[in-house]
Image 1 (tube, rainbow, N blue to C red):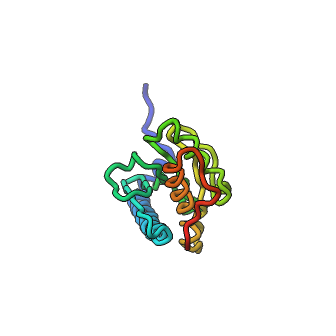
Image 2 (cartoon, rainbow, N blue to C red; image 1 turned 45 degrees about the vertical axis):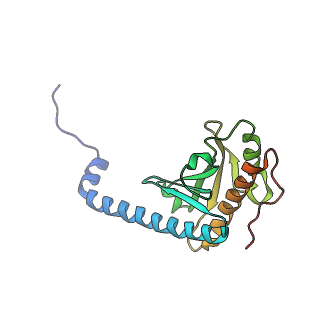
Image 3 (cartoon, rainbow, N blue to C red; image 1 turned 90 degrees about the horizontal axis):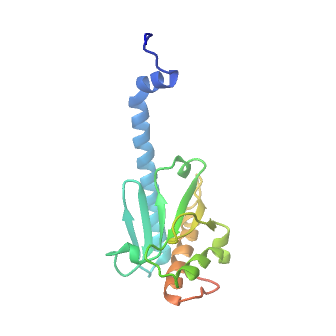
Length: 178
């Protein structure tokens, strides 16, 4: 086969401006991480005296309530993929409530957390394994107070914690006292 070397316009533009793209991506990641660090502190403030635990990776964060963080999978938690640009535009956090080691008896109670009045507007059923309880979409638009972003996450964490200790029913309100 004969012919000439041919690259798309997109490939040429990327090659020409890759240094700018790379710098922009690093700035985006740093801005998202700074926002999530502030959000974590706001969640911790709203949850006090409950003990918020966190695992932070390159691509995700997990938050849960426990006296120690030795085994996060033993607790119901929320998981956040920190990579999507949708965190900034349109300004939404997509979280998943999970309970990796929940027993079959605990799952109905944990899953029912999503229909609590203070959570229902943010949640929908999740896909995935049985330990994937539900998803949350929390607005985090420019200028939104961190407290407004943190409150639905706090509500979910508290309700999951209560449900994991309550057996088969979730109290009608699992609101933190603020």
